[in-house]
Figure 1: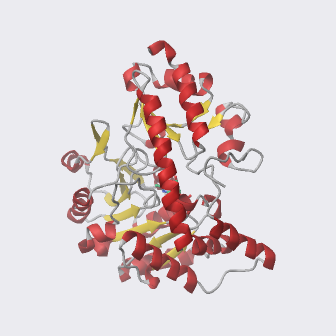
Figure 2: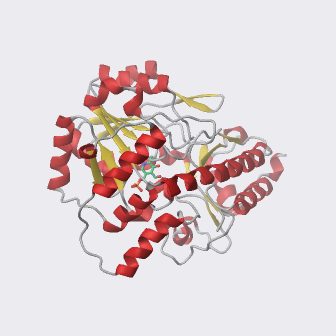
Figure 3: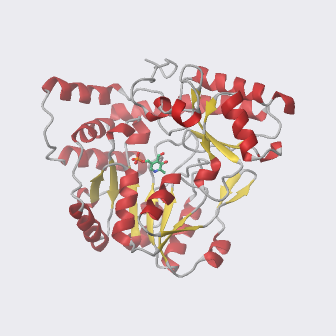
Length: 390
Ligand SMILES: Cc1ncc(COP(=O)(O)O)c(C=O)c1O
């Protein structure tokens, strides 16, 4: 199989295609699903084989003995990210939205505020608000279309109720790979304001050739007493349905608090996810990710060239992630107007920028992790839908 091979997902209970009609009014035969952040690709054979051997065995009881899993994480973080992780720092969660919720419950109280650097992954705000905490939006600024920190402004927004900052690194949406200097500025901001820093690095393997991601734990080792790292195999290997992720905490006191929450809520590992993730963090998995990123690089170029041909549209230069972030402000249209064109005329389902918080209003997010022919089709449809702007 190559990444070019189309795989029909309609009727497989996948959110991305099987909710297209109910959420976007688009028939999966004609519409293009470019919203949810999962890929149209099968994971590497090493992951498929792990599941096949589970099926062949055919008994699906409780999971036990996570030594191979922890060793796989240790190996991956050391070889891919130059980060030394101890096995007893690692907690297994049911994904990283779950991990975020567990952190919010562990390290904040109702009425506390949590800082988000907006626009940012929409589930953070949902989880924070549902837990009875407040969101404090600290907006990013744009410089030539690239997201930048604005810490001087953030300082003026603080109310004193903030207890935590959730960083998305690399950033979703917009695909920014934060530099070491930027990561250190964020770490210093957290230290000065006594904030727990949650670094969600779910996208940290999906970095384009020529870019270098630094894990927060390496960028600012001096804040390990307030740092919680979150990582996962799910975005990297397209196994989000396995609902598995890691919360990695070096500090013993923070670990104890988090461990109490995990125990209080009865969180225990999902056996399917554990087998798949253990297999994925391997040399075969690593080679597949390298191939994947080369393929996505081609998709990114095709998409950006197509968007550049439409006056008023601007695609953010992605440094990581497969989530193209397109600014429609140059069209002079309202969000309702450009959404109508993209959805009703081009027949493409995207994530609406406003759902990512302040600063996202004039944007749409397009998932380009699909066979290149689908990217070409999307570009063609967009060019036709906005042909009157030529
Ligand atoms: C930054 C970020 N965190 C977490 C998630 C979802 O994590 P999970 O599927 O493990 O709950 C996403 C999905 O797009 C994401 O972009």
